[in-house]
Image (cartoon, rainbow, N blue to C red; front, side, top):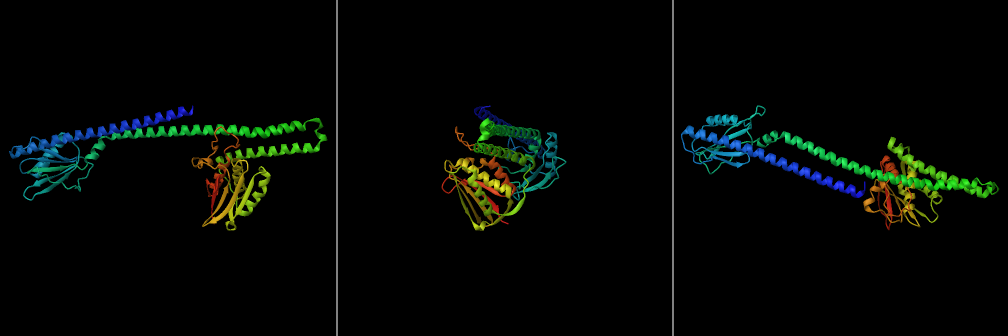
Length: 421
């Protein structure tokens, strides 16, 4: 699948997800409002009937055509135009709520016009599971009526939510499906990227192996000639070529096998106390024999860096990988600098070069397996994209930290932070 097609699929998927979530949220919102309106209408009908019964009992005429006034979402006042007996009011409320099958908790208070205050009545549970108790809600007065009672429904939202359990259940399922779809898209894109990296890795590996195999093949053909035994110097030269290219092949294979061992069984370290500066000196001695002659290595070790605990073989490989990486990208005249110093409770190893550096958007990605910094249509840098992945895993196994940043003048600087013990 082409990159444009993948982007189109991702875009359409994102639009679909947003649309589905929006529709579901709107549907849930409308369902909540509808149920709330239905409950309010039932409550108004019940309270109107209660008011009508009380006025009929007291033989008074109603002042308002609609004596029920809703002050808040869960608080109502009801005008009865006569004195109210609490027992009679509670009896009528229970009877009407039961008749209309309204199972909701409520508490009521009766307005006393002589004392100008709301006299609390009682808290009545609409279900058997709820224990009656007085809520913290103070039933407010209403100036528009003289004889009235107030009724508060503290569990109205919980009641509506309980009746909409099925809606919430299907909403949760929908959210789960959306997250599953997003995760699936993420995995597919990740696998596609990984597949592209593996393809690049195979292409690079084929190219890397092809060069030494060709050199070995040519040298073997020359050695197979009849008159070569009479020219021992030439024979020795091509014998060295075969040996060097074989060692190079062995190194490439070993690098791939190291990564496979990491992923299969982790990294087994053999830690010992070593002199860091002395090890860097040994690496510097081997530098001239392993890179092109125009390369230059600068060593600036601080005596305070001292001894550290590490696996000598793996730490040496870290230096060789970082130096090899610097030489590849530093240009025609590579200049690599290795510095050590101690800062507070840690030792710093800084390996920098004079190359073009690494763009900030690639600095975290360079430690991924198979990743190589894009160079456009120019493919003059060989490699598998495994060197820095190996370096990061060795640092993690040692519980060290590594990151890359710009060098002092130019190029990239890899900084390893080793905690002091």
